Length: 240
Image 1 (cartoon, rainbow, N blue to C red):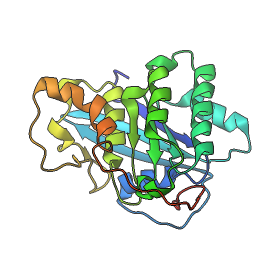
Image 2 (cartoon, rainbow, N blue to C red):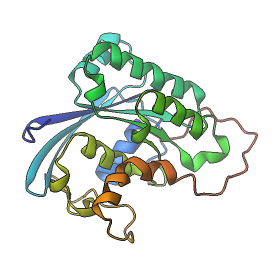
Image 3 (cartoon, rainbow, N blue to C red):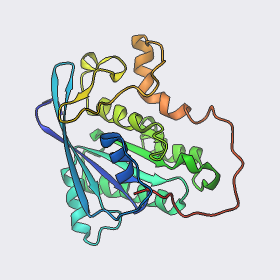
Image 4 (cartoon, helix red, strand yellow):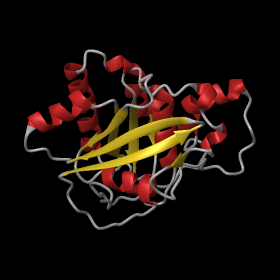
């Protein structure tokens, strides 16, 4: 990962209908559609300039229901980083993420060194929550993934950029080369840029900056008042 000229493949894995494609499209294109289309396999190539360093990234969006296990195994074997996505409205999709992490550990002997972010999508459907945040965090911390967990909403564009901030940090871009609050990170192939989601945040000291990546996504939701949950039971969120 030290060679910033190499292509870095970030693989999105998770059950079907959890919002992998929606998260990617929200970040890369700034769009969202509630219409669900099953993904076969989509690859998005982007290039970034990070304070003079040229970073090439391939985002691989995989199918939720892979008919051929060899395809998933190949995706895992060739990845430089992982984003494991589940819907917090579906316990089954969380179980799938935990199984995927076990698959990664089986295929990659160096799994502890590979960047990985656990993403709980659909915080806009809090009333239908089936996976408690503390349960997910407990598992994540037990597998040394606690500092790379974030709850998001692809629909409302909430905390989406946090996923990629964590990834760039874990891909070991030298901290001295990271732009302040990521505001200078721009994509070369598009007018869209990765920007700080909290535009009004005050500049952070080096010590606070170090804590930022590990804590921000963990406490963001905790400060919000608890929402009374509905008795309705939706299996997952309506995302593509």
